[in-house]
Image 1 (cartoon, one colour):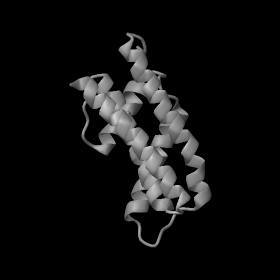
Image 2: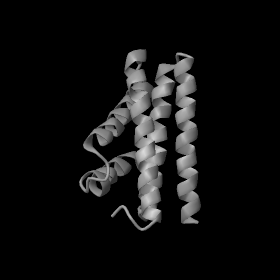
Image 3: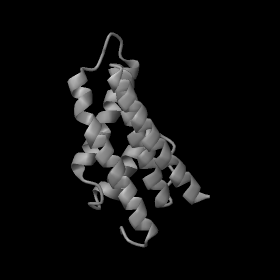
Length: 133
């Protein structure tokens, strides 16, 4: 069952990332940021699940990412900063009135989010092969 949840979250991450690209192309930048964040969030949930860690809150996920993966040099600080930035941007885009993201800001996050998801998938595969610790 755990493996199914991990696969489900990784698939959700990839699908949500694709949604973010479509929204970006349609010039829906706030929605694109939202989807970029959730793509990273779903991938992070999969990573945590692969280590037997279940977290329900966004803040808890961010904290565990730092403690379990950044401090152990499994995820770079730069990748973790992208995740934190996305969390802040998602909140701003979803809740701040009269605010719209600039397309340049959003475009600069597209590639790093894909790299983040790819790195997480790599860590999950390594863990499945008995590596990554």
